[in-house]
Length: 289
Image (tube, rainbow, N blue to C red):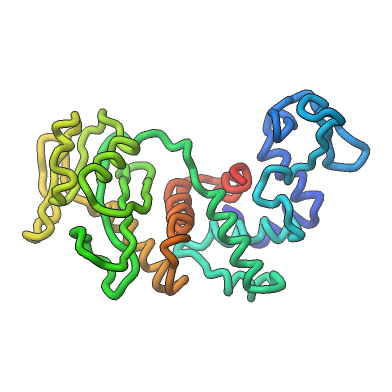
């Protein structure tokens, strides 16, 4: 776990930050960020290399080339500080609070940094979920909170998610809760080898068994929240807990989130959940930047 004391000891200056970025980005040796050529030449200036393969006169680069840190005047240490704060805040932290804590120059700078880091938290390498999996939909925004959507007209953003009870969570914003959209999400995120696929009674999940899933559902409209089959317990409690944490973070920390930026917040909360048992969540973010 990265504490403030450990952070200051590990990253006393910019050179320490650059050295760590090189280690996390290129664990087997420096490669060209353009063509992945491992035969690069170290220049006289520290942390500068040249690749003669992808440019006529040679492409010169530094560790921040091709990362979220590129083309900014913000010190790498401040970027690292924001990453540490975001990874250690269970319910998230606002850009305004980060601006107050770090003195980023302006609120806009802190907002920009937070969103770029959230974009880097998107993990496309997660394999399709296996084991006991829950799928559920919810909506965020508008007047009401923490209720299931039944595809009625509203200004709320629709979010669908899947969670392995002993593993990862995947969620995304969808336009409508149509059967086609919901089945597409399930097929993209959930393996057909799951031991059980639990959902609520939404008709969008009605044909999942026909597609080869061990699908069972509970009927929330009849106040049925858990039932048991030969394959295991049927409920969506794990995903409901994730939705609750997400909504508490949005309402209590951010107060209001634009639908345009909601996917970035989903990245952040999903990343923290998926790396909750990691000894180096901070390093995982830096490696993905």
